[in-house]
Image 1 (cartoon, rainbow, N blue to C red):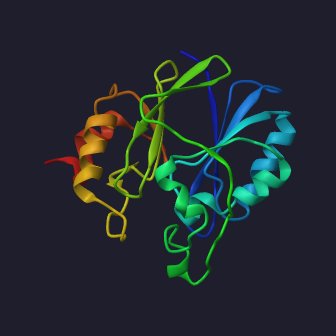
Image 2 (cartoon, one colour; image 1 turned 90 degrees about the vertical axis):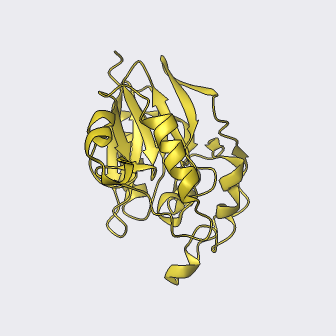
Length: 216
């Protein structure tokens, strides 16, 4: 088992969890889903304190609370690759797609060059390998990242403790969502730790047994 470090930074506005994934001080890291302040500032301070070297900014999907901190991160790390599913990319330029228009605070990140997160592909961080899963349904192009060696899956808003992401948005698909969760996530080992976009860490086994949205 790899002793990956996953540090959580939760914004105060939406309770969204951003993550820094790393293995050792002065080593490489990923920044995942930087949300509203103070999240970006906390992430940057953490990276500086640990002398980490960001290799990628990864976006599990394009909703406002997961992308709001992107400009601050890219300003600090010019040229940092942004990994995001092509199907989610419109959210970076369209406030209707990232849902910020509905909150009266339209967010436009801009025309950022992105690297597609292709389901089934593997990403490498330090000595670990992470598999990309399609967990769309809450939002277009939603992705989860699974590290078998570490027993960890980072799921964005696909799965929460005793809940799942909303599917009442204009671009949601409830049937696809439930199918993806059951086929991609619930088939993982029960002891797999689930790091969600909101709320505490849970496990696949706990959600299989007790998540009320997944019992049929």
